Image (tube, rainbow over all chains, first blue to last red; front, side, top):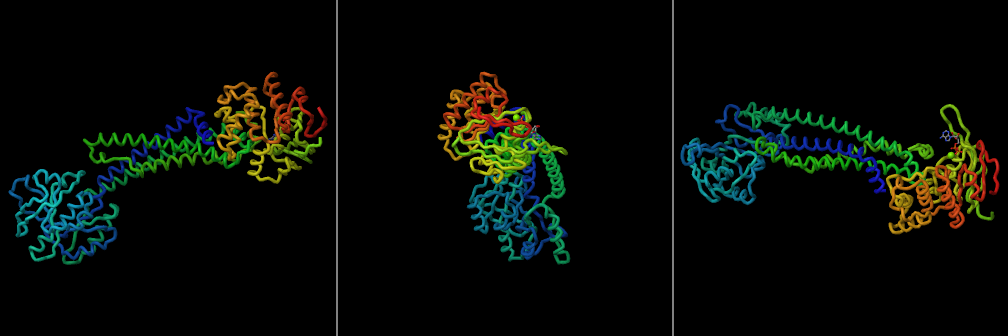
Amino acid sequence: MLKLIWRNLLRNKTRTFLTLASVGLALFILTFLGAVLDAMESAQGSSDSRVVVRHAVSLTFQLPEAYEKRLKTVDHVEGVTILNWFGGTYKDQRPENFFPRFGAEPETLFDVFPEYRVGEEQQRAFEADRSGFIAGKSLAEKQGWELGDVITIKGDIYPLDLELTLRGIFEQPDALAQEKQIFFHRRYVEEAMSNPGIVGTYWLKLDSPEHVPAVVKTVEAMYESSAAPVRAETEEAFALSFLEMMGNIRLLFSSIGLAIVISILFITANTMAMAARDRVREVAVLRTLGFQRGQVTTLVLAESLLVGVLGAVIGAAGASGLIGFAAKAAEGFFPALSAMQPTPGMLGLSLFIGLSIGFVSGVFPAWSAARIDIVEGLRKVA
Amino acid sequence: MSQQVIVEVSGLEKTYKKESFEVQVLQGIDLEIHSGEYVALMGPSGSGKSTLLNLLAGIDKPTAGKIVVGGSDMSKLSDSKLARWRHRHIGFIFQFYNLLPVLTAFENVELPLTLTRLSKAKRRQKVETALQVVGLADRMDHYPRQLSGGQEQRVAIARSIVTDPALLLADEPTGDLDSESAGEILDLLQQLNEDFGKTIVMVTHDPGAARRAKRLVRLEKGLLVGAEAA
Ligand SMILES: Nc1ncnc2c1ncn2[C@@H]1O[C@H](COP(=O)(O)OP(=O)(O)O)[C@@H](O)[C@H]1O
Ligand SMILES: [Mg+2]
């Protein structure tokens, strides 16, 4: 049976080749577009789903610590952490010695900023040491800091000096600018000032960028008439508009994809119908020999599925190759795309589409093959 | 003829409906064929010979009447049972051979066996035997287009006997062959009848071919007009 399916497929090599090529090309384009889209979204994705909450009047006004509990309960909020701007001076006023210093909550920092990668051991060491700090890799390298080094930051906004021990180094290769800052325990400052319980900014991690507008609205409304009203905004000012643009691209890509799939479907369906029509007589012979309707159906459908799957494999393999190549090429001028890679989901989808094309094109010919009148079929001149 | 009855046809009618008008092709056929017989079915073109043969093969359905082959009343069989029945009991030989062009001679002959549970080795053995019987053991890796018409028909005969059916039905098996190849095919059918005990019904135009059979049945305008020993 298998042999027959395979041989039938190879019978009209030109036709099979053209069909395979068109299915392959379509899935190649789909897989590639999908990878581009995924890469662009993931480059943007994490920060797009964060919301910053600060005092409505100005960044120099503080919020009460008690807001944290309530912010956690807002729908679509997955995590909340605190960042307090410390300011101060490291060594001197020269620009290379300026870098952002934040009082943070070590326990939740990495939940809200999962893109900051730090070894688990270092993270625990940082959490355990009330006077510990972590620094971005580029900054640490530039300053020549090593784990265990102690640095002093002179306070200006706050009337105290920080003595901090380097407990960890985090990496954020996708945004090197963010490696040029340090985080320490905000409790260090709190305790030194006998616990005023004040917060500069709350950072909320949402389950999806789509929910940013709703959360912004809810949070602002929550504290509208309180003593410390808040302003909530997206991490980047352009995030919303960017999102909107991505939505349009996704729609565009999806429509292109759909159009491709449909036109390929017509091509394969036509091929399969032609192939089946040419073989009515052979099907009649098989039925005379004792093949069941179901077996004839299987034969035709399997051939069609095989075309679809082979096309998908060819297309997806080709796309994977190009994606790897394009990702390298993009490194220099379009970093967002250099993260592009063929994901199992995408390859699976390609296979699924290939199978569906095969199924849809084969199902009618297979059904009619099962129903042919044997005697009439035998009369057909091939 | 003391042998058991293998084909029993009574009151068989077949009418084709074509849009508005009807063609009554078979108008009441009664026929008995015994095991081991070799029957030639003759008659003018359009007299219904093929129609009768197709009904015996269970690939067509009668309008009225009864066909019992090998003890099974075919009108009572479902489509899938009928297919299984054909596979087990009938070997069909076509005028135009009807080998599958994408398969070799060996694979064509093996095709009916793929419906069985036989092991690969056992299948191979049966296919080789069948091809030896028709004298084409040396051509089993040839594709149909690499064979002559007579050889193709011999492969087709090998395919029809590989499942060892009791009844062989041949519709003008020599109709498309030159006289030499036709002679070989007729020799082969005779051998299958005499040495292997196959019951054969052969439709033919050729009186010479018909003389090889043991019994001659004539069909004219949908009726049997004479049954005689050849
Ligand atoms: N499917 C069909 N539809 C209509 N008429 C048919 C069909 N099959 C056969 N016939 C008619 O039945 C008659 C007998 O056909 P057939 O059995 O093939 O004759 P033979 O084999 O004796 O030449 C012919 O007149 C033919 O036109
Ligand atoms: Mg005929």
